[in-house]
Length: 133
Image (cartoon, rainbow, N blue to C red; front, side, top):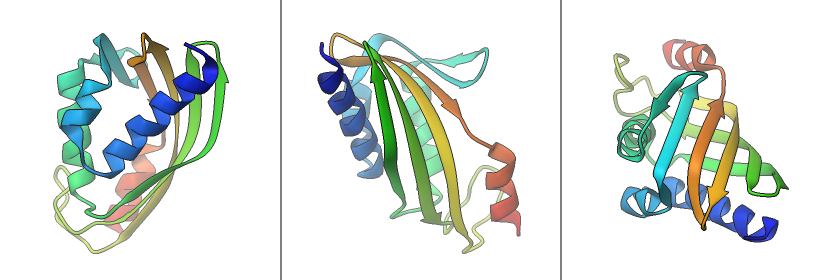
């Protein structure tokens, strides 16, 4: 696939997450999909979707917009800003009503029109600080 087509797959992937269409998100995951929330910790597509849904459910009506995107062959990198209001439990944290806003960097590998690998880089402690303030 060309770089523009790979970028379109990634744009669709994040739009579906924002729309809470997790079955369709799973459909964009390659059979060999791996998600790395940390350097050496890999999750399968099913584990990724379950984790993503649990995280996003804590801030209904959140936005997760791509602000910058770069492509190189079948690799796509994007700078994303997440914004939402914490109205449901987030792991051990009860709802606070706090506004949550943080940035993330993602590096994705696209193969055969599907996302084969996703690596996330963000400050998880910043998320906890904002929700605990």
